[in-house]
Each structure stands twice: as structure tokens, then as C-alpha cells.
Image (cartoon, rainbow over all chains, first blue to last red; front, side, top):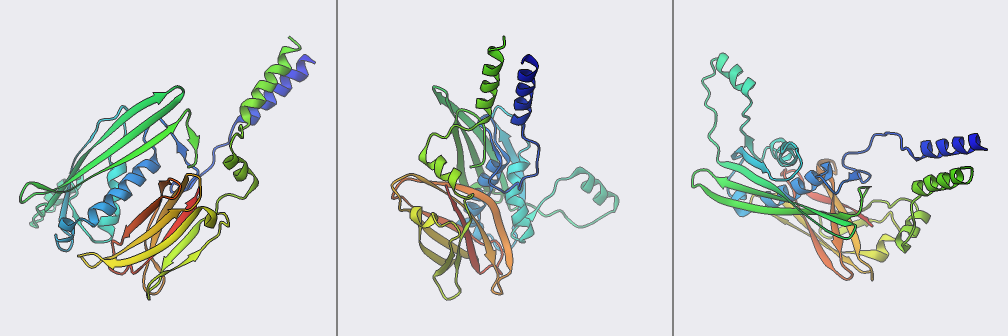
Length: 181
Length: 143
């Protein structure tokens, strides 16, 4: 009996495991974490910010493909991540649609350009995009709530003034991490 | 010890199952996964819908679609959604842009979670990045 019980227990424990599988990174079966920003949160915030920025009057008045430089994006949350997870959701569609000219500050590319003796001038930025990512946590009993605040500012270099600002808050609530929305 | 082991096994078994405690979860358990529904603007105005989740119409209404141009000449579409049910709903939306010939020119693939209180009206705004994008196809899942 003891052996049978142990075997039954072992099989049940094995049955609890979920084998790893591939998921659509834009799908609805992604892990939702309370303690960190998930990949879909960056996508949500980045897409919303992009939509907001391209409809701003000042950005629309800037003409075709204004020169954009990425400034400092401060991560003021408790977890470590690369802020390009947010920025790429904005810069990739903008660049690929030809809506901005993005200054790429890659050291290798700069060195290669210097070695090639290129006389072409690197364009001066019209706009600089900078921002901050913050978090706020609270709980009631076993229910935890995490809010992640994405703040971005687009500064017109010539005048040194902010021509667009927006804030997007992603709030998640629950007692444990889950899968799907 | 003999009595304890089956109890422990039961404990592990309970840990594996989901506790169904709301009507919504029971409904989800009995029906296929929520299907994606579509609303597409038309060149002549208005919009067409493709409802693949039969429960969608009981929960969320697609009231209107307005199409305009931004100052830069890019197409902008606003879809009005209303939660017509007595329960809070969540509309998860994403959209694709189509050229005049129907080909997909750009897409925002990630789902944007839009909670809707009972009776609440919300407007989803989508602005095209490319000048070739003329019609918008909204994708909606209701949970």
C-alpha cells in the first residue's frame, strides 16, 4: 500500500507540471506578473504612446521625417530591464513607415563612418524623446496591486520646449501571477 | 502513515485543479475559447462587422466608426464601443490598416486591455502611420 501511495503521489506531482511551449508574443496566453513589467505591458504602453504622439499637432506640423534622437529613459522601478523594450514599440513603426529619421548612436557604426572618411554630416535632431518609468505598489489583504507608470516627453531642440507629453499607466491586480488576460 | 499518504495525494490533486467560483468561469469552461470579432471601415463610410463569438453581441455593442484625416494627411478612425450588459466587461482590442486594394499595410498586433463598466461607452482611436493606409480593421475580444 505504501509503495502504491507513493507512486500515486509521484504521478500526481508530475501531472502538475506544464511542459514548455511556444506562444505568440502578441497573443493572449502570456504570463501576467504582479511584481514586474511584462513584455505585453511594454507593447501596450508603447503602442498607446505612439498613437498619442503621432496625433499631436506639433508632431504633425514638423513636416516629413523629422530627425529624432532618443534621450534618457530613466527606470525608476525596482526591477531591472532594458528601456528599449518600450522605445522599440515606438521607433520601429515610425522608422519603418518613414515618419522619422532616427539618429543611431552606435559606436561601431560611428567608427566605421570615420574610417570610411565620410564627409556627410550627421543630421542635427529636431526632437529628443526622453522619459521615465515608475511603479506604485499597494495591497489589501492577500490582493496585491502593481501600477507601472510610463511617462514620455518629446522636446523640440530648436526652442528647448516640450511639444508633447503623455503618461500611460498599466495596473495589474491579483493574489498571484497568472496566464492570459 | 498509511492514512496520511492518500490525504497528501489528495492535497496535491487539489493543487492542480482550478477552483471554479464564478458564473463567468463556468461559462468559459463550457464554451470554446473566445473568438476574435472584427469591424472594418468601408471606403464609402460606415463599417462592416464579422462577429465570430455569438456571446459578443450580448455584451459589447459596436456603435459607430468615424473616419477622418489628420493635419498631416493620415487616416484616423474612431470606433465607439458600449458595454450593453449588466456586468463589467473587458474589451481587448488591436487593429490592422488596409490599403485601398485590401492588402495589410500596417498592424498593431498587441492587445490593448480596455475595461468597460456596465453601460460605459468608450472610443478607440487608431491613426495610420502610412499614407497608403486607408481602411482600419478593428479586432475585438470580449472577456
